[in-house]
Length: 387
Length: 223
Image 1 (cartoon, one colour):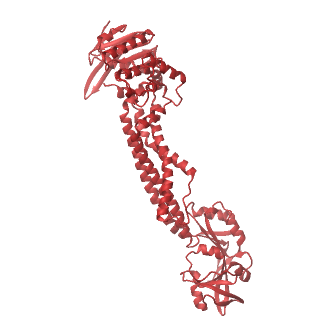
Image 2 (cartoon, chains in turn orange, yellow):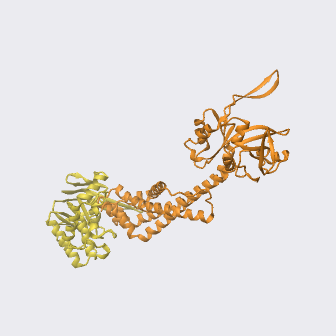
Image 3 (tube, rainbow over the protein chains, first blue to last red):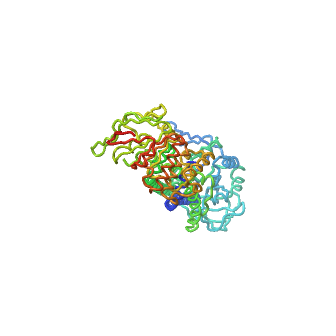
């Protein structure tokens, strides 16, 4: 028996009132947790889907551009100090950054020119597995190559070269087979020929050399600037560009969902807090004589204050734990019902549960602050004596 | 041991001043039983509340063991209420969700520390003293009015206070139960407890060592 016996017994005696308050608060926490789980999973899923629409970080060799003119005659820009990148070095470095979990795909490119008959055409060496992840929107008439000398030709290039799936063509002096023709994309991809990286490096460059590397990063959990800074630190001799407009477009959709859920969560939490505050206030008014009696027995203001705060803490901790578990279960149900968790799933986290519990306890105690303070200011003379 | 010096108290309500206490003096010796009688509105309950520190006087001093109670800090006053002074009200004011024993132990439940075993033993002894042996586990709702008042007295006794203030302790009880409560108070006085009791009942008042009569906020007679 100690001071905690008083709120414990009181909540047990007024079990209907306590239960109702607990149910309301738990429902609030359940809603908030489930909404946040759903938003997190949907955001992650959405971002994974959006990642299929291209890269958002570009890694290029460091270069300096010099505008050359002489006697009023402009000779255009000269690019100085351009060195190719080492594919293994770049890919290896990106895999070592702290935020590597946020990297969805690293797709190196080697761009060169070749002649097909008398026509010049751009040849882009790619890693097929990476490229297909990066450009999930690609649709191919035919199939992606399974051999080194297979190529995929962009729609415009195929038209100008007069090739179709199954055709053979000479890239410089090398015979290749057109495995597939890309459906029009409306981008530069329509005008080039895609070959495997090993083929391109063997015939148009040097082994392990690439011109640039495209990276698709998931930015739900961190700003793109952090990822860029970490890659830059790992690859000091390169230029790293975040394609902010792409990132912003992607994050807008994700953040919109998150902000909406955050707003709804805050409203629910506010209403739940009001419920706790109002219930506690009515409890103080009901128990004014009890408070007066305790004060007459030598209970100080902090003791009275703590009795009501502890009641709120009891309700908050129960609502926090039950609400979290309920919210997690509800989020699983919602995601399975709406079929929205493609590529992502909610992960139960005991640490999150403890933090949520702590947050809810803090919020419920804060909600009870005014009623508890009011209770602590009761004087025995006001409560017990009929003047 | 306890002395009231020139106590005044005025209540203000709706523009009217009610002079409840007008320069009241009283001294209570250790182990003395003083009863205060008077008509309704004579100021006796107000005086008891001022003496027991539940109500602050407008002026005057309450001196307990040489210390001015009216000048005490809140924490010192809390300690005084917890240790030295005990109050029994006309209405027992038991917490309905605590058992009789827990109600008796309430003064020990103001902190996080557990109630010591010695206090529990004392609570059982106090309940036995007021004739409620074996009823410690009962909730107040399962006790009669007289038994509830006895629990309230046991709650006042458990702290081994020096002064017991009783405000109409028999006011809500039948004759037989009231007499048993008075017998209990007389026994407690014999054990050395100082008692200040407010009552309407002259028969019960006469059981005290001294009877103080009040009228219009003043002591008008001491017998």
